[in-house]
Length: 193
Ligand SMILES: CC(C)(COP(=O)(O)OP(=O)(O)OC[C@H]1O[C@@H](n2cnc3c(N)ncnc32)[C@H](O)[C@@H]1OP(=O)(O)O)[C@@H](O)C(=O)NCCC(=O)NCCS
Image (cartoon, rainbow, N blue to C red; front, side):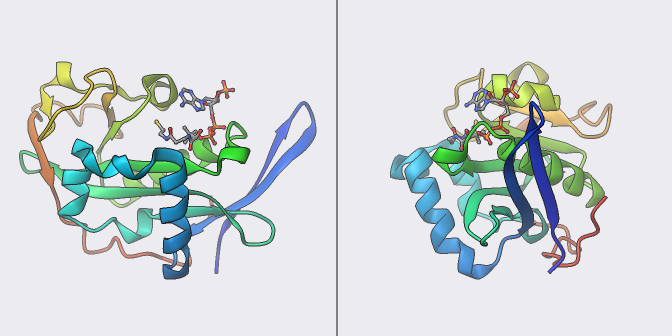
């Protein structure tokens, strides 16, 4: 399986080794366990889960970070959505093993996911998450741009990213579930670049 290997260095000391691969079925119980530990079972009550319930995660954008011995360190999935007919992706949930947070694993998963999403043809990405975490990737508040989620959300946390400049021009309205692009199957042979 082709994978991306990362070595995170801080102050010239190697603190973290991991690789990012497409999620496989045997990762699913481990991902559920990680999500329960990081977000708790109450996560299913959130508005974004109404969108996730009605679609499958995009296989090519469902990635896990694995440690040296193949242990699951983190997970990130993206889901197809539509903004009044315009296809987009919904980022999350993103979760990193609690003892390994703050070492760049989450950032690597987000960067890789966004760049792969753009390669699949998506121009817009929506997230509900901490602005302090997502703003450095270029996310901005979504409500002032006229985007609406089908349920309650903290406006501060509801954000959107133009993966292509100008992609939000003329796009606004209610976000609903989408369908994954036909070429967005999980590719175990992703080119690393
Ligand atoms: C949030 C989370 C996914 C970040 O992943 P991570 O691997 O720990 O983060 P990274 O090491 O890539 O962090 C990169 C930067 O974001 C910061 N950061 C980490 N978590 C943050 C948070 N919740 N809010 C704001 N900033 C955060 C880090 O301090 C780091 O900043 P620095 O480079 O200036 O030091 C991870 O901590 C996690 O799983 N948390 C619990 C689940 C959760 O809250 N997920 C929702 C994300 S909104």
